[in-house]
Amino acid sequence: MIVLTCEWCGVEFRRSPCEAAAARYCSNTCRYKAKRLKTRICKMCGVSFRPESGQRNTVRYCSKSCRMAARSKRRRRVTKRCEACRKPFEVCWCHRHIRFCSIACSVVVRRHCRWPEPEQLRRLVQYLTLTKIGELYGVTQSAVQYWAKCYNIVVPRRKLKSSRAPSRVSGYVGEAYGV
Image 1 (cartoon, helix red, strand yellow):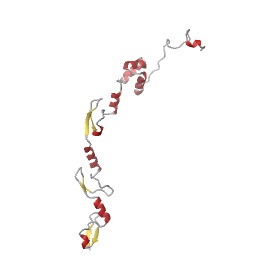
Image 2 (cartoon, rainbow, N blue to C red):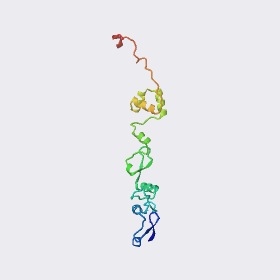
Image 3 (cartoon, rainbow, N blue to C red):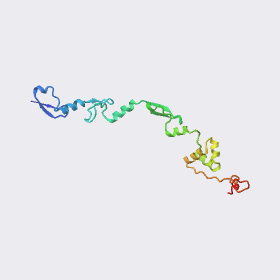
Image 4 (cartoon, rainbow, N blue to C red):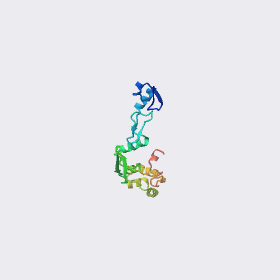
């Protein structure tokens, strides 16, 4: 009997002289593991490595960092210019349709009109009605209310002018019905 060393696990085993020429492993389990998990060369850094027994046969990289580096290298990057602030920014090729560098820039551009600055709106709300402010900016009263809400501005309640307030004067429609 000839004493050999298993190429996979390093254990010594014995074989007859006629089997010794072909014997490289101590058992079928070691032979299967060695066949399935051969020593490979990392496609990113070039280091030879042996995949762990739980890994698949398709492992190409020695570590997670090499795998992620190869992945980012594969992804083409595109430099674009933001349509709102005109600053350059990078995106992956798959996101090349993006027009803005941030959500804030996209919100600013998608507004139908230019919002007033918070201090300017605060002064306007003190002296004008929401309807008048809306007319200045070409929006509705509810849009002005929304701006005030976004800027945390308290809108004062306006009192109706005496000429507009219903009163008990002759010709009042309610008198005809006894109200």
